[in-house]
Image (tube, rainbow over all chains, first blue to last red; front, side, top):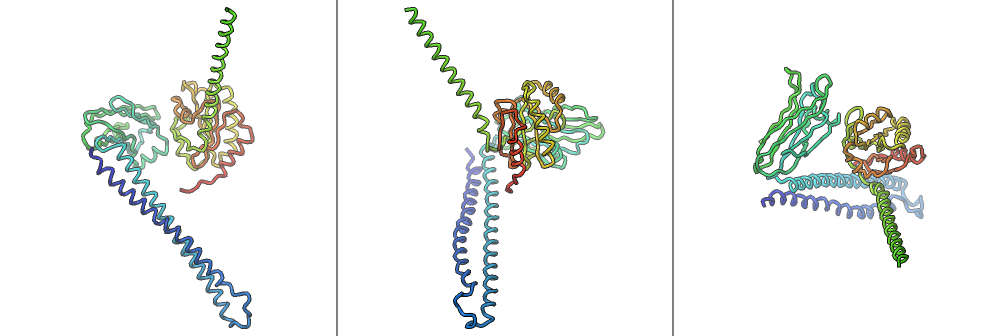
Length: 228
Length: 182
């Protein structure tokens, strides 16, 4: 069992992030009543005492105080709002990071490196082939049947690489068969299969299905590449 | 003696009938309850081929209200349901409403023939493997599923009354909803 390295580091990171995400929340909960308490005495200060006679107080002082006090209160409130907003943004970022760590942890647990096999799809140009679906078989078992929408095909043509399949395989020789369905030249239904024999070793195995245009033959070309 | 035996046999048959009826009722109630279990749950994602046009993936319509109508050529009321939904689609399409008809036909050719015979302005999808109808726990045809902008199943109807004002009210409610930013 050699998973301590794979599982402990994300778990530690996760706990660390959890703690990091909790303390701003605690601070925020403490800050809100404190701000409310600060704001409460500020309000009477801004309003001149109603019982004070107008003539007894110099003419400039109440007007200046009244103008300065609300301005200070507004700036305090603005700063507090900004601070809260920053804390919320920080919390959101921590949640996203935590989610990423959990995803990686899940991947590590479900597909350990010593058994992991991943198949990727990439497309180039695509003048002679409009991809509709790919069926994937490993050792004569259907493992994936993926339908492509125009948006997904467009993303692939822009240079995107899709992880079509990830699974576990024991070490040893295996065979992968990929069936490509779509429209070929002259809008004709096109179905082509390609296969590869590969040996799964101790590390993760990555395979890539590449669809390219073969200009000389005016035909699409399908290739399965083994990334060692 | 024979009369007693007959009485016992009769009692036994009545009891068996009662048990069978109870079981049938329980199954029917469970089936009737199944679609309601989908309510307020995220709609299962799917990708299906369309009878005409390109493939459709539900998750690509996140942010828009989606109506799914499950139909079959063997269902007599489905044609009227699709026609009524077509009218609603014509009215609310410009507001962002998305409607898909999902066939649960075994025979794809039969589904295609039906789709060509009952032309609609929204895409008719083919679920030959019935994976989508199973995911949505469809037990009765026609069934209409209304999904909100956040991808959550909000309403389900297992009837053929799309002209019912409640449909319009629910579709309008979905259109009025604003997507909560993440």
